[in-house]
Image (cartoon, rainbow, N blue to C red; front, side, top):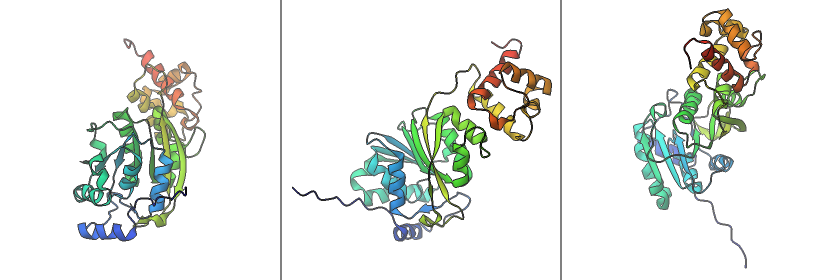
Length: 293
């Protein structure tokens, strides 16, 4: 018996994207960080790299005209798409009904700012999105905080942001996005996407960041308390931790006491520390406050 290779389902190309944009009178804006993917092979690459299970519910942020949405519906059981632009949110279900009629019922569109979403009608297990450059890190951290059902994901962001999100201690690009991301799990650089697969074409490459959720470090400090230490340490990253954390602790001496209690050299800089050490510093300060359990 001869096997016949099935033709992959059609995706939106440059012609279809521009036609849809013209129909809606939509012009991609820098304000919303809109850059629409116009290359089907890039969509297939993103979906394949995301390693989705056919039973999963995928959360997509900023679906735009639906390039990635169609590819996600081909790979997963359901897509919940959060879109801030009313015109795009209204058109997306129709696009899916036209191009994937059998999957139309598997799409839920939420008209909202992703930074304000704290509940969804279906619990997402994966996040896959082409994120606006200007809000990528806050959106990822917000969604990981509010949706513990998210076990893994793949996001496309500005390439240098991808490097920062995936960096480890001691790396020059290591900073707040790296450490806060590590609270939720492991982030890795999963590839680079060129400029010519977008409309309009950005002036820089994009990067893919994959993540797997893990357990936060064992600590009696809260996430907010740990994140406050991280923010303080990197607000003045060239300073020693004794100096950088003085405002957070109340004085350089109190900062030094918390650092020593946590087993951290007060002369070290924040870029050398991992998430467990930041948690230890937060816990040491909490433990030093009289009356704190």
